[in-house]
Length: 489
Picture 1 (cartoon, helix red, strand yellow):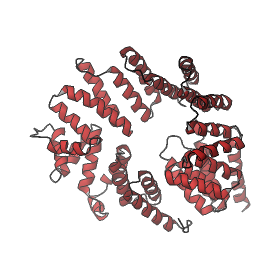
Picture 2: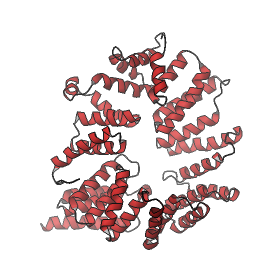
Picture 3: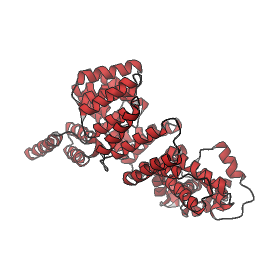
Picture 4: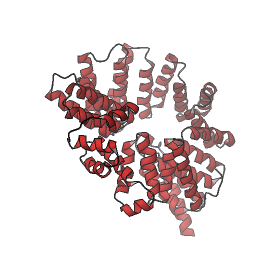
């Protein structure tokens, strides 16, 4: 978009309009991106926080992300909320549902505030307080229209338990935990599967498979970034799955072994040797399983063993020549090895087959920008990738770097600050984004911000995104030069 991005007012006003626009378009990623960036400028904006918590996250089933924003609003005086045009009864209803999903008794208080004007809130309140319920029409009617609405499904669990319909309750526990896994709601999923575990111990006559308990616990613990506990459940899931004959004939076990290997290669666990051996054993038994070769490549990739990673990825491609993602990953590995011409050729082959393959658009565009050539083509490629995935921090970083290479530093700043905002909500921040941001600030005559960005780059230089040897010395050199310029000034 056009405009003077050096003006803070212009940037924040545009961000707000874009956030509202994308809420209307039901584009969650874009709406959350612009709302978060607006909150960076205006952290006390009640309207923006409500837009983000209620309009973007809750309405799209992203309850864990919704809760902190709604709780901040709940701590504000009612008069301030009213002045900001926030419906406090709706706020209570949303908070009640999220807390109910977490089996938090505070949900009762929130439903009690809005139950007189909301039949569904009244139903939830009655279920949670064990009040006698004549019928469950509001809840059942809502579930008929919205069968995958997680808060309502949790309310159904309460109702089934209250009515002592334990067979249906046992089945629903597994279904709700599975739904929570699909939605990435690990807090709810873990609490529900724990109830299933307890019920199985209390009522061994009920048909709750131990395999399902370990499998779902594994998924939820991975989602909640608990790799060590997830590893325990993963091993049990595979062992119990074998004992119970739970895998079936369609190679689900092979896929589970691959995911176990991925978990072992997690930075916190660093079980690379075991992961490698698991996968080698598997390809010995299933020599044409390309997914195992791809995972072997990723294990080697994690250790920066580029030649081995490239060998296994090439084998995966031989077994599955139509998999564009394998051709793309092979090209990335070639780039990491410094074989830039071959990498560019691979990216272009991917885009010939699928011109809208966003990862290849971004990687080719960034490769061109890094080399300082064909910048117009690079910008066009990355802009299209950003349009497809506006909240992808890597794509924003690439676009910012293209603008930097083109000398358009204010536009570079706009996109790199977007990338930095997005990375605050990711588990694996990239030091390269902060380095690029520092370079832009330096060009714009903002030495203090540049120093701050470079120091942040050093701080996050760990994990999968860790830069190669020699990078740290380069960043420290940039810091020394800025300090030297300031001293000379």
